[in-house]
Structure formats: C-alpha cells, structure tokens
Length: 466
Image (cartoon, rainbow, N blue to C red; front, top):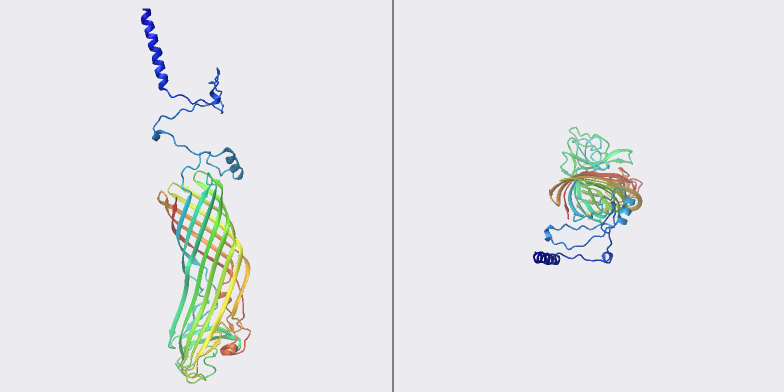
C-alpha cells in the first residue's frame, strides 16, 4: 500500500512539472523582482497598477486594434482654448478622411449697372430721345444683367491629433460675360444716341439713321446732323448701324487658416482668417456708322461718319478676412455654412477713350479725338486707392453619392462696397464745339465715381473627401 501511494505522488509531481514548462513565462521587470504578501491586493480607485505583459497567443485577426492616444497635457491645452471643441477623449482620429476637394459650377446674377441711355429708337419723324423713343441699351435697361456662369475650386486639409487646425484655399470667378445690342436701319427706323446739348440747353440726339414723318415734320429739337433745314415728307436723312456692348469679368481667390472652436459628434464650427484677392473688371462701348444721304444740307451726300466710345474700369482688391464656417453631418446629408468678411485696399483704374473718323469719299480719311460720350474734356487714364470690404455668405447642402463623394447645391451672395463701374464714368452732357477737332470744352466732365455692386446665385458641384 505504501509503495502504491508513493508511486502516485511521484507521477503527480512529474505532471505538474510538465504543465509548468508549457505555460508562457511572465516577463519580469525590476518592479516585479521582489514580491511581498499582499502585493496582489488592490484598493478601489488604484490607478498605478502593475500588470504582467503576457504575449498575445491569439491570431492577428482576433487581436484588438491599437489607437494612438493624445497626451493629457495636450487635451488640457485644447480645453482651455475651446472647452467644447475637444471631443476625441483620448481615442485619436483613427483613419477618418481629413482632406477635401470640390469643383463647382456657379449660376449667378449680377446687379444691373446704371448708365446714360446709349441707344434709342423711334418711329419716322420722331427724334430718338430718351423718354420719347424706346431705349434699347443703357438708361432704364441696366447694363450687365442676365446669367453670369462661373466656377469655384476648393482644396483643404485638417491637421492635428483631433483635426483642430486646418488650411483651405479657393479659386473662383465668372467667365467673361457681355451684353450686346446692334441694329442696322435704312432710315425707316430712327436710331439715335441721346444726350444733353449744352450749346442749345436741351435734350438732343446724334442721328445714326433717320427719316422724316409723312408731313416732313421732325418731333424734337434739330440736331447737328440736320441743322436748321426744312425736311420734306418721308425723307431719309441718314442710314447706318449701331453696336453697343457691356462686359464684366470677375476672378478671385483666398487662403484661410482654420481653428476649431466647437464640436459635437456630428457638428463642428471653425474660426477662419486669411488673405483675399479679388478683381472685378467692367467696360461699356459704343460704335456707330452713319451715312448722310440728304441733299438739302451742307454735308456732301455719301459722307460717312464713324464713332467709337470706350469706358473701361478695373478694380483690384487685396486684403484680409475673418469668418466662421459650420458643418453639420447627418448620415448621408451635410449642411455647410460660411460667413466671411474681407477688408482691405481697392485699386480703382479708369480708362476713357474714343475717336471719330470722317470719310467724304473725296479727301483722305480724317480722324479726330473723341467719339460721342468721349471727348477731349474727359478722355484719359486715372487711378486711385480706396478702402473697401467684401462680405460673403454661402450655404451648401450635400448629399452623399458614395462614401467619399457628395453632390452639393447651394447659394452664394457677394457684395463689393467700393468699385468703379463703367457706366458710372459716363457724362451725358456734351459740348459739341469740341467735336471734329474743335477746342476742348468742359463737358462731358472727367468723373471718377464709385458705387457698390453685388452678385448672387446658385452653386452646383461635387466634393471628394480623402
């Protein structure tokens, strides 16, 4: 019996020794080199635990994902800057997309620009004056109205352990847009360029094409084309054509530094600040060709008069900006709003030029300074610097097409406080004594006016996050 018990005891010791050899051994540190009774007993709330670092024997696919942690000191710094902004809670940003690129088509409209009436038409025998005939270009038909298509490209990225900083850049503009009007008449439709004649002290009209009424009458004051002659019934005085045009072009860009000021699980607000560049160009031009066919005046039959007027302005803005950008995400839908205020220097530039050419079919062409609204008294180049600001409001709704691609539609409003527009530089009072090589007069006056201007419209685009 004693021999049996001794055999069982020896076998048990051998089994325990084999099992111990198969178990992984703990990696012993200096802190674990000396153990005492009670070392394994921990109180509730203890934080400085001593843990054994056993190698993980599980397959890699079953092992937990390791996240980078954010230092406690960094978390405290962010909390001091923006108490509601820091929501990473030490888990880090993992693999979330923090870069974006968007391309948008702009379908905007611009504010109509004021100018004197540049082209008026009327029935035979009615002098084409503003308020008497039909204004076809300028005047109550504001320049620059209509659809202004354009583009906008945006690229940006967040930085930091929790995307608390970012940088964003934009390039935008409208394609060069123009409004035009042209008409050719044999006299059956009267075409005139209305102005105020300072020599006679009343409204007048430069006749491009004109025909008297059935009774040979002319409603309105006489003009430089007809003088004080008597016109027979339904008599064609002149034939010709007119072409009027206005152009507008805008391009801009900005670079913004973004700082997180508030965030929740699906909402973030960033304070933005940076540099803004913008350039707004505008022009208005008028060309006429008029051939005299009336034999009862002092002008040789067949004499052709050409006139050309050009008013061009350029406004270049350099300045800083501040604003707020807010983004809300709800599953497949997002809403982004931007409120930005730019302020700085506007360099305004104005160029007024024109000429007239007379072809009497006998002598060489004669060319003179000044057209109709451009004369020696107001032609030239001028520039100045003024303070201005450009507020911008943008609201954008996004709908995810794929995990990292969204279709966006939105609305944008931009406002320029101080810009020189072409129509504002035109003076419709003319001293005709300086035409065709006469001495310079006082009118039209050389003016340098500025005004406000706005654009607004719909934005359609795609946004890619990566």
